[in-house]
Length: 258
Image 1 (cartoon, helix red, strand yellow):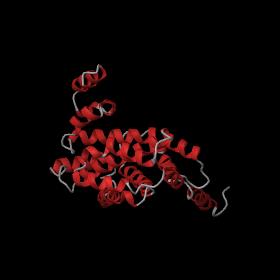
Image 2: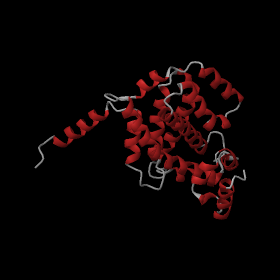
Image 3: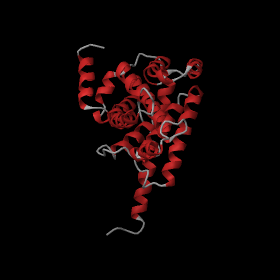
Image 4: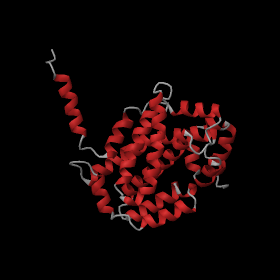
């Protein structure tokens, strides 16, 4: 028989335990709860976006411009979700609404917010992966390589110029790593958290990209992925293009035809 107040105390204890967790471990926990779900939950998408935003914060004021964009896009999606949580419980429903209204490609659409949040998460996970796999690389090299592979192709000259200036302000690798680690964590524990996060986050990103490519919010996203990231393209669901076209494109890449 439970004693009075036992359950609240248990919940409080669990909350206290997580208080010292790193953002990476919290993201792993969040994604572990929904890893078998096929539909991308808006709430989970926003939660993980917020956690990865806090990871970028640890790089310092260098990421200020990117941070502002991410924050603005999170708030835009969050406002819509809060207005009717049951209706907008999944990203697919949000896109369906804007496609039917003909507003999906507009600059201030929620589809655009989702697009840039997905790209920002691509960048964040690329930074963490390189940090974990390449112990010899400086943080400047890690960030620069991740930026080239994820955000740079979509940035205009103003954003690219701002990024080049920001690179000069990036802290040392060991300082960033110490900020990433949670209470009581060491370097190996942090690496293990990153290794757990990547396979959990990748399906969410793949599905998000697939939804966006289906309506081509980025106007040219399909062509870009085929040319610049064929491996990622071939991993995505073929629901947004014909099975025959998907097979031919991926097969030609495998044969080295492009």
